[in-house]
Amino acid sequence: MTDPKQDRVLIFDTTLRDGEQSPGATMTHAEKLEIAQLLDEMGVDVIEAGFPIASEGDFAAVSEIARQAKTAQICGLARAQFGDIDRCWEAVKHAVNPRIHTFIGTSPLHRAIPNLDMDQMAERIHETVSHARNLCENIQWSPMDATRTEPDYLCRTVEIAIKAGATTINIPDTVGYTAPRESADLIRMLLERVPGADEIIFATHCHNDLGMATANSLAAVEAGARQIECTINGLGERAGNTALEEVVMALKVRNDIMPFQTRVDSTKLMNISRRVAAVSGFAVQFNKAIVGKNAFAHESGIHQDGMLKNAETFEIMRPEDVGLTETNIVMGKHSGRAALRSKLENLGYELGDNQLKDVFVRFKELADRKKEVYDEDLVALMRTASDPE
Ligand code: KIV
Ligand code: ZN
Image (cartoon, rainbow, N blue to C red; front, side, top):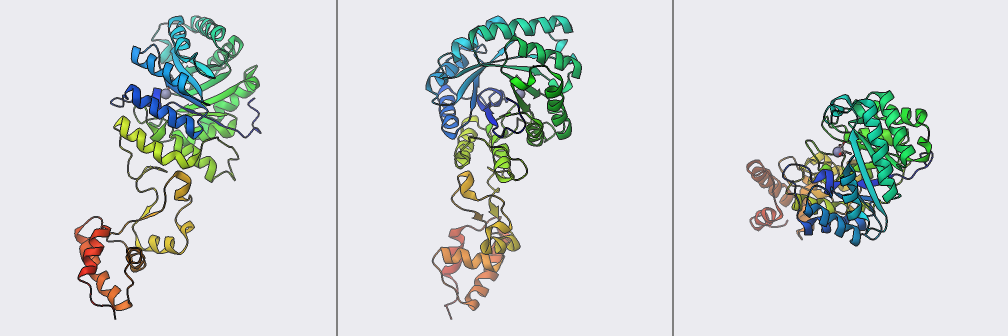
């Protein structure tokens, strides 16, 4: 299944689980249902809807999302404990295609927490994955902190999980420590060394502590991973997870060098980004790739002039491709005459050259005093403009 020639990449969204784990990002039951519906409609393959053992509320939300989803697989998270796994199954079993995702920390630091030695942990993995597989056919297993786990031990645990019935093996970069080349090498190593690796799907799950989550996810895909775990707006613990909108658009825009397809309808990205920002209370930074307020905005004269002549001069994506109606030409002190003329024309003013010269001088004076000159400001300027020649 992980034939590198196969070009379909599954998008696994964990906004409602890893994203919601961001301190302060808790969503209500109704908000979680709304976001899950938008994800399903957008074409996400797997929705990780929550951590059913965490609370009664999370259990109820995962159960209802499982009942409501039309096409997406619905997944719940469970620690490597029978009680967690049973509770998770109770919540997801209503879905058309349910998935149990169970995990344990395999790195030396994480092994120390439950105080298990390597053999004891190997046994726990075998027992818990087998238990999950007896309940559900669709099992994802994650060695948490995989990128800081000894490679030999990582291969050993992945092999155990596959033999016990895992159908997806997720390789988390839990603390955002890896770098693109290393991320690719890790997937390649697992594909080469682990018996049965070609029978399952490898997933990549990156955190953004060093700002490399998107690059690391794409590098893993190029090496053979076929599922990307991500969140809307990159929401997630600390510096967040890989941003869904970034990997989807990167695979679309640079399909020439990364020939992989997703099922996601990118024209729905802006709407879901805004809804997630609203319900999580985490505003999107202005210069955020793809969905930031400035991602399709231009203020400088040179850029505005280029954009007015040919949008491809300064934009590699069309605003319509992410669900916007148009590029935003922002009028400020860096704007030039061509943009001012075009803005005024859109507002219904046809200007001769002398009149434009006059308005332009007064526009620049105003722009020096204000960060942004709005349409209303331009209308006010026009009220006192000299008569057309
Ligand atoms: O970052 C991580 O390791 C996780 C696991 C639970 C998959 O979110
Ligand atoms: Zn995570």
